[in-house]
Image 1 (cartoon, rainbow, N blue to C red):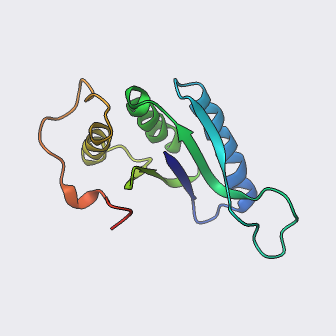
Image 2: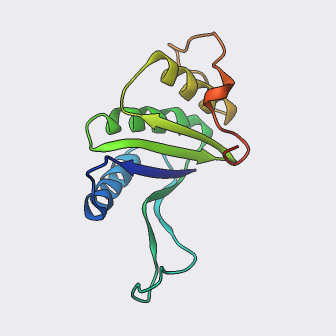
Image 3: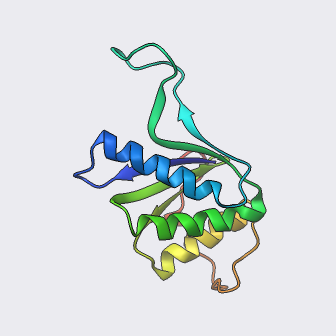
Length: 140
């Protein structure tokens, strides 16, 4: 699973880097296999040699059973940080998680988790989520 943080309009690169590392630490507290900073294939022009990191991006290895816990953590974590959203991409499907909790967002999280093998949450609404809000097939 890939996670990409979108900072608030007044966030700078340093702040986004700190927030990414904070989120990584929080995720490592869950039952995930691995949380790594996403590496770029090539360093940006003018960058120093070495491994280039994609700012605000994490790669998370997680079993389907723990996916719902990761998504719940993201929803809560964003609400207390200067982050506009976190985009979660898994198997070509994308979900944008916002800090403002809503019934619609909860429903979209449940649909996304179920599509990737996670059991429904006990409080999940049984009505199907509107498909127009999830992006599938690589963001189409």
